[in-house]
Length: 234
Image (cartoon, rainbow, N blue to C red; front, side, top):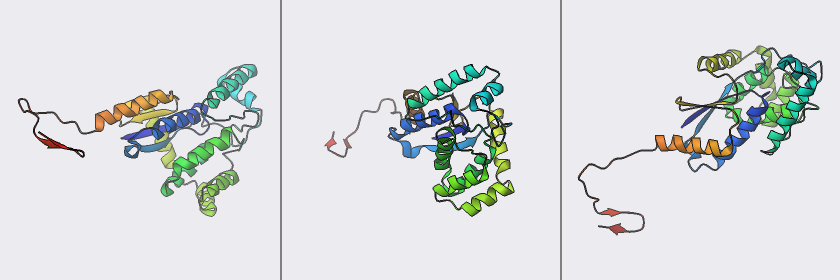
């Protein structure tokens, strides 16, 4: 079972959706059969590397709404985050560009740490108020996971993995992704948004039912003598 997840570190519902999917996956009895592939996406590729105005002013301009309306939206995001045990601190959030963070995550994938770094970057952005466009910050976050800071800085300074990030964003457009989080299941189904845990559970069960071996009895054949782990019967 292959599940591809397009998301952005700066997307409030991506962090929430990731948590809900994790809850469903943790309870799924066949989770060892699930291959999760993370894909990059940018909601605002023109976001600056440093925020000059308040978060509410920045969000209001980017979404063509009033500052009061932006604050109402923030309150809604915070309430949704609480439902999965997350804390969003919009009073200190730094709405900056996520491209370099995506590059760093692709590098971390070489060490099987992309998923862990993704979670750390989302927490850094929404909870800790860190600037994930800042090289020093990114290096520090990589080191927290045991990754080599010198190598992380070299990757960031040299622009490595930029082509992969751009390719994944282009791929999203090609398959019709218009918002994130977006889950592609076995290249057969698409699930958009931070769906409830119960929905993700149902999706996983549906995929498993489709993938597990299915056998049909030949017409006219009676059940023969069989043995199970417990007994043998005729």
